[in-house]
Image 1 (tube, rainbow, N blue to C red):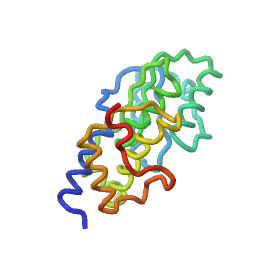
Image 2 (cartoon, rainbow, N blue to C red):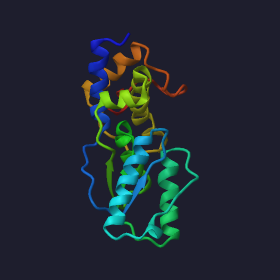
Image 3 (cartoon, one colour):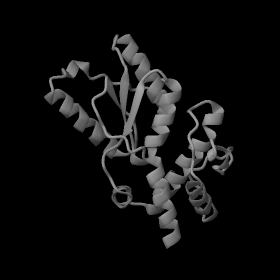
Length: 196
């Protein structure tokens, strides 16, 4: 049973994970691979708009090797360099709850470009409906927040401030058992990043 408090805490994490960046024209757009077909749909929408604006389909590159966000950024950057594409800004297209993680990863691996991190417009309720498993969605949000806390220490992304209310919501959700997506060998707390 998911309590009213659990839902309030989940919404707090959902809101924090989203960057609030408005999509805008950038040198390139990168659709980050995902189990979530909404990411593919959003990437296709941006592709269709680019084609309408006269971007040739030959300018659409596919990077098939990545297995995680860091590899998405690394391999995409390599592919663009090989294609001699001048990049000053990147639009990252991700799952709604992965906007902040994608941004932090890209800022670490590609610090010299402007990063815009966005996703298809979707509410938490609609996202839960699309996945069909509320508990899994909460677990994913909790796991994503843990990664924002521990990955900077491992050199995978930049540090970001995690507000106290977000940390407290995260810790309550952990205590209530929403832990299936936590990294097993990492601290389950978000305290290490909250004051940075």
